[in-house]
Length: 175
Image (cartoon, rainbow, N blue to C red; front, side, top):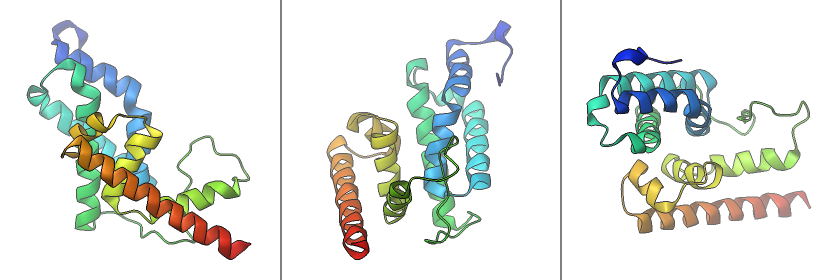
């Protein structure tokens, strides 16, 4: 899915092409966990790459391309949620399966986790996703979502606590 011809590329463009090839799936899954709907996620990822291509000059260094793409994708997804541009409203009856290779019979614990994640605000969901599923440091996440690593750490822990409370309540109600 290379965007530019290899003969005339700068190191930034080469880094962007490598990131498009290697990070598409992780960026898609991150956006999908935020906006929920598959078509919305695909549109936002496509918009992410178009925006990245048109603003490649604003990339500070080729080494920062992955974080830069995550920042663009996160901002676009959060803006879409704020503006109501997303197609689906999330309800407990419609909990999408974000995993591409999900088993035919989903693990019931996963649906509880999905519901717990949906209890989070979009900002909490974004930080939780980047930390838990993408295994990024608080410093990396702060660079993506804006703010300080300490603020990101606090929001992450608030998200975990909110999920724990939800999961505990669900577990006690099913017991």
